[in-house]
Figure 1 (cartoon, rainbow, N blue to C red):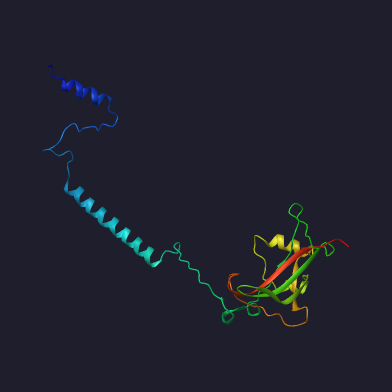
Figure 2 (cartoon, rainbow, N blue to C red; figure 1 turned 120 degrees about the vertical axis):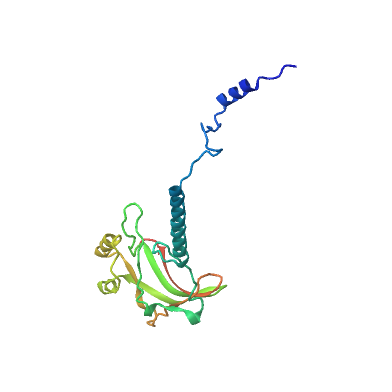
Length: 205
């Protein structure tokens, strides 16, 4: 039986194998690299500096020293009547409207829409209105209570003010009583007190 020509066979494989690794052309005492004392010193310095830099960045990450690293957490508050938030003590103001999606014209004609506002309370099972609040077009005095509009929304809000389109709640309920704006709760399945506004279409007169 004739033996295969191994040198020729290996040469054929080496020519076709695209994943083959190039072999060094020579070595020194069996080693393919030749180190120097200066190279060793540079390697040690580089390793030490890299380790110190990585350690300092890790400490910054853990201690949140870098201002670009933020930590946020959400805590639920005002869940019960005892911890309710009193909107009268927070300078809270609210204005609202409905406008046409295409023309951007406000839909505030009283011949076509009716506004309803109120304070609602729920025991987690059944909700009821405990105070009915009237709605009126925001007056100049109403709008002066608001904080200045932000840069992005300033032009749009000023346009709504000029067109007299914004709606506001009355200061008292329909019976002339002070509105209880101490609100609490975060879920319909739990006791809560909420402030709501609704707009209902009506038949033109």
